[in-house]
Image (cartoon, rainbow, N blue to C red; front, side, top):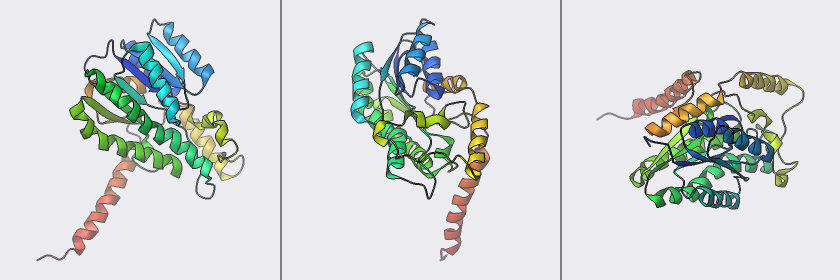
Length: 282
């Protein structure tokens, strides 16, 4: 999508962090943006702040892990703007608990927000992008943890899933005029450590909480400190805008974790080398 001005975007998790950075960057490029979030006060502020810059934006409240909520948000987007060209599946949560602390509610919450919302988003918005025949782009936020397991199992599983889904759909949707990109950010200045603030009532008491004492406390403090000094979400938004214009397959934010990914690929290559060495030669 070489020219973004006048197009319409739908962005989930748009009231703060990376989502707000993307919404802001797109709005500055002349894109009409529907901001979607589960947190009403933050959403109202984000919309008001962007409107103060003369951006053409609106907001819709939704729990994106619920398909009917996403469908309502899509209906509101079409009612407000008429068309949609860009889908940004950005909403995400951390947590889910590590080995030994898993609960059904914890897994369902993380999978619902991080993975199922992406699946439902593509299923609902894909046909809307196809309908007008003007082309479009789908950007889904995974994580660097979608390339190399670094955090906790539930989070890593969902982020690997988003990467796989995006890579699978890219060649399938290209003939339909839809580009597919996956965003794999590193350490960004967001509120992800405080994801528990938005746990839906249906999961109340079912999601493991972070430890308040012991070794886990130090890990949490270190992660919190790293995120507090992380990359500016507005910079990530600028990268995403550029990626949409250039139809990038993968969007990375920095080089910090490249050695970890290189090491993972080297280990995978070793697995093939072992088989190659065992294969009889005739």
